[in-house]
Figure (cartoon, rainbow, N blue to C red):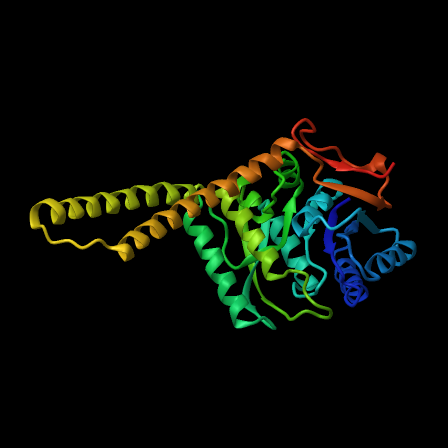
Length: 327
């Protein structure tokens, strides 16, 4: 298999047929063997039925149906686990990322690169708030991490089999795949494109999911929040020590003081706020450690048309939680 296309879907019934038509037309020009892997992440609409209909007409269409919604990053992970291609493309089903860019990505990959990601030149059909928060997040993440995570990029990219095998050795539960790919290294480059509006339907990426993804990216690739908590503790301790010296001076030297309820409450609230922030940051890291210690499978497959005998094992099965298949 030359090329695998991984497509996570969640309530994308309005876009599946159009996406299939555009992908089929583009991939026919490449004249390479390929497979389309649709990963149904607990859709509540007719997405799964439409994909199954496509698989009956086209043997190159594969599907993976989860037992419930596990999240976008886990859906991409499942596709990577079961993909057979020597090169793998990750693309969303909403048609904001153009399938017509795949031949250019594929050509660039064969110029000696292991990863070619698509960088957004513009984003159409998105609110100012979403554009601003996305731009801010990528730049904050780039400034606090020890690895170079490209800004203004999503998961739309092509990666080699070498990178896929490396990803299978990364067993963390809280996935941030674009960060993992950057951490792996190898030669990487990019192509710029203009991101279109959604072809149909509503996005499944709510603000709460975006915040969760941002937390996964920050806690998975940076210790800056922990350092912030430590530094804040020292700063607050220093301020408290200065206030203590001032209080003693007013009490025993200047003899000019008034019992101050307001200053006392401000001090208590300030110290308590910093302590709660520090505890919350530490708690985020501990919750992720706890999830990895439990070693539950990343996902459970309810149904798939990918034969178990054709599924390549993880590069290191001992460290990869792996899928659970239907019995």
